[in-house]
View: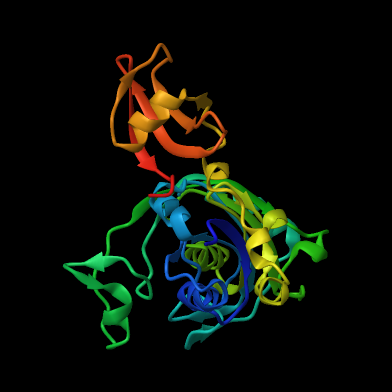
Length: 296
């Protein structure tokens, strides 16, 4: 059975779960999940976990992500993106120098008000459920970090939508929990003309980049799609490897612990035949399993 991580370049108008459902049929494998949900209208990096690799989905680094987004000025919508209901339209009198000069205000730690059309819960209710009923509730701003915010003025090939006089293409490197459409909305408000997100492409997530991704069409047409899977230990490449003896590997496979001179920290544990067995941790000279990946 196939096991590993498939980096998909998610197409527009597909939900993340749509992609998983399609791949379950392709691989004839029920154990398929994803990390880092993408909205249907967004494209880009979507890590898919297949077979035993699904055990690693909860361990995927969900910190910094990179996006390329198009901000359309002069339009404010109820969803903060171009696909929502238009609430306001204004004339745009912003030049590139004015736009670029504003970006430092949105770099570093900033406060974001979660949009009503989001999965954030207030008193047990998801905001988008309330928004669809025409309700708006009070929300508290949340801190997020924009590590890098760059205008891609001279790189049209990297932008997901054609440039226009009232559109700007941005590269955003940000922390978990950042709403790019809210960033676009807030920049538009600061410029005095309003704005919304017109396109979104994720170029990095969970430690994987767009250069490692395959289009869904490519995966579906491939004669051997299982060959596109990355081994699950790629997810833990920043941890040192620890090769176990046969006795240690057997003990580990039975859920046991054992003493080791290895320094404290997390390790990728391998069998004598270099099979990836588990993500482990060493504390006070004892090695134990965080998550196992060997065949049961």
